[in-house]
Length: 491
Ligand SMILES: Nc1ncnc2c1ncn2[C@@H]1O[C@H](COP(=O)(O)OP(=O)(O)OP(=O)(O)O)[C@@H](O)[C@H]1O
Ligand SMILES: [Mg+2]
Image 1 (spheres, rainbow, N blue to C red):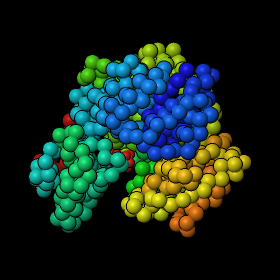
Image 2: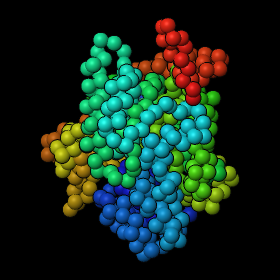
Image 3: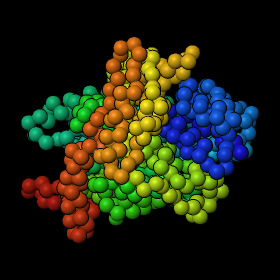
Image 4: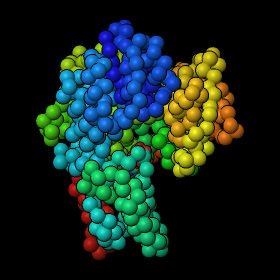
């Protein structure tokens, strides 16, 4: 059996590893944009091969697909999906685990996602406005003083989101200026590289609460969830510093997180199911692949959608794939043949922690973070009971050179999140930069201090949304204007 994997990050390393564990002993072939040492090793040890090139070019990937002739392809990242790589492979007779271009719109366009949730009245939706040009966005900003999230309307590689609270009335002018400036920046900078969607700027109502990711397999008919994961986006300890692609993530023993309860998990799955059904109605085709809700527990709804991924999260995928007991080849075949209802997802009963190690300069000065030689003592890390998944590194003449983003991710599992976190911390010293440049990571991810902060926040919003539910005003925003009365925003 042969499997073709598209992508070259740590998420894809974890996918390759899970595929290679299959009883069907597949040969792994990979199409990568850089030489990921972990994936290369798996290709070689399983008798497969790897190819380097533009993974977003459907023609290129299709040619490789035709040459390899795999049983199926597994598409790791979102951009190849946005560019129609699944469509090109399927046209060539190669079935894919990975959304078709049209269906991947659920991640590519945050404006489309919001419209879809409103059209089908799916719970967990937020009020929003999408703008095709900057002038209209600014006119709106000038008129309404609101707490908002200002975003590029497209998935823009995790860049360009600004959340602005509107609290002090005397700062209204300054705040409006900040919003205007940022709207311009989104239009002129973050949306500049993309001409594949008409909407440019998205304004959403601001919500608060702990965030979590729900990753699911789907064949378009059945949605099978994996354990919940929480990612930590800020670069530095205690949630300080710029937003990154994710500095590390945790999952609890079983399917829940310490701050998300069983009924909240089930509701989150229902939201994903409703979206998968809505996508079939919109496009007349079934979603074959991984779909993930990036969620927040809010006072407005309880489980609420911030955005969707048409793939595993990174690092979130690296939490769940190593503990997946169900055979990933069999899951993939069930996705393709739409027989997922016959599968059961089983995972090891362990809590997991993943932490990314990144070169100084990441995320804002990737030019400085790039090009440094690093050494990874994998054996020492394994002796501690942890594992390495390679991310933004390139094998160059036998040396490992950083690519400017998170270089490696270290995974550990244990009885508790705190224990797994400590195991990872012991391993960090085994990743070294050889030219004196600095590397950084977050020791606090998975610590009891941070867990307690999340639990307290969850309890606060849980009290409010349950109260709302008891009063029949879930998802409804109510304002009071003196002399005018109650204004209810329908949802
Ligand atoms: N409506 C909102 N209210 C409050 N906070 C929000 C809202 N939308 C986004 N955020 C915050 O901003 C972060 C980034 O937003 P979002 O996930 O939409 O963008 P992104 O750039 O695609 O992020 P990434 O790719 O890093 O996940 C969220 O994780 C959340 O913390
Ligand atoms: Mg996000």
